Length: 409
Image 1: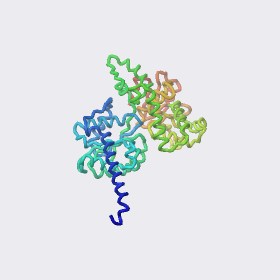
Image 2: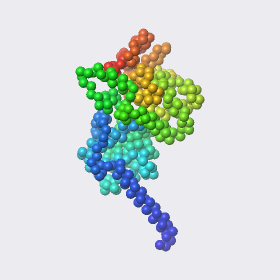
Image 3: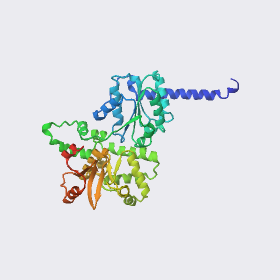
Image 4: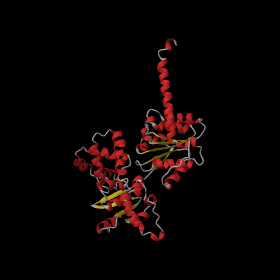
């Protein structure tokens, strides 16, 4: 073997280890992609308002980004999209991987795709459909996606439960992506998941089921099973996997206490100083923790409607939660007025609503030149009516109960 004989055993050991890893990765990829070997059907109720869009997206070249709260149904929707694609696309031309699996920790997205092409004998001219779940587990994924998008015949779907995949990475993929935020079930989907079909002659039943929705919220697993453990384990996963693991939060107990306080304060104005005093931690820590909850789509903050940026920055924010069922599991089903206001916020949040507060008079939302006051069964007070009348906005709406809610755009 000459002068290289010392290195030969090491090189051979490396080769064998890499071969073993390739065999192991091949096994894992087959587990993730059962349609390569057998007929595939994804069980679950189809949320057509998303599924139809994803099927349209599959025909487009750009990267499709799917994001939203953990366990809101992203992976199920991806699998249902794959099921539909299999009607026209060869099974081996579709790859699904979840980067949460440790086998992919030391391998780039490009490595995974090359291994997949090797396993299935696919050259780079053959179009593939690539679905990558939990993309947030891979650093610098945007560079690799750009390379794939620009140089191969590939349609890419990615999903993740952290809003930073939009804020931090979107610029690198400008012009190459389309983003979809998956929300908890809306009321129509809530009825669908509960197998409730309300006849036109029995519309009066909607109010009863709407109150059930007000309590249960729209997390799919919880709605299907009615098991509160699904919610508590979800929040545990979010706290430990998405916040503590990512940001290295040391005082987990205070982080959990803050979450409970935020649940109690749904629909109310926040004081970071008061929260810091109650918890016995620094104001900066409170602000950081709340930003972490926002990153993972658990909490939303709403700014005050004001003429100057200075007023907006100095004014307290109002707090809302992404799913009222989560809130109810942790602090109880109470204060239906605040819960109903939270539902209205979720319905209009894509319009970037603000709250109005002037001279002790408050209006729940200002959005798109509309003033919206929210009431659940209660009558609007004379003071609230006066505030609504005096505000210099042409269109004024009172959302009172189910009927007005469903008509709200």
